[in-house]
Image 1 (tube, rainbow, N blue to C red):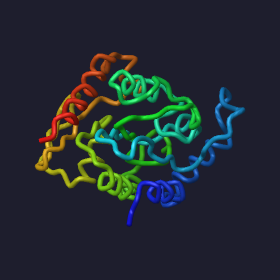
Image 2: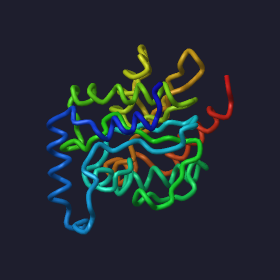
Image 3: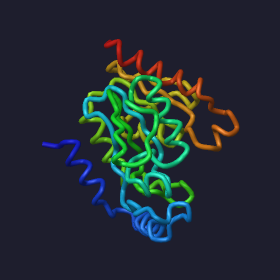
Length: 222
């Protein structure tokens, strides 16, 4: 029988994509000067959260000096700062920060994952690398009792659609919803990358509205 712990072990052990293996391990050795005292994780980054989560948040991939450094998804970079602050404001996290694996962060009713579990060069996985990792997302979505998914960015939305077999879906846009026939819902959000937050294409109010909508959907069984 499959389980989330078994899935996470499989993720961490994966060496399916030679380009990503080479990159994540090279970054972990060369490091960034600001993090020269860190022992980088340098492996596929597992998902994180509540195994009974009704909300699943899906991103693109770990950042080279974020998740690839800390070993926790969306941790150690500005995108993660935005995400966990928003989850805390929405009541899904016990604290607003995520800095390292042992910092005491707990998610309540939420689970954070990615389409690709290794940091890719230029933050751009290839279609084949996406497809190599997609079975992990498919397994997660079978194992979790989710009611709503928040897809952070068009790449994540496309990955979620593939994992769910979602066809004839609405075009990506912030706040766009794709309802499933079983009553569950996929919600789109702009990714909290610096490209989006610095330009105010994504504001904290806009981000909060997505998670408020997700909480509403999770609270109302249909």
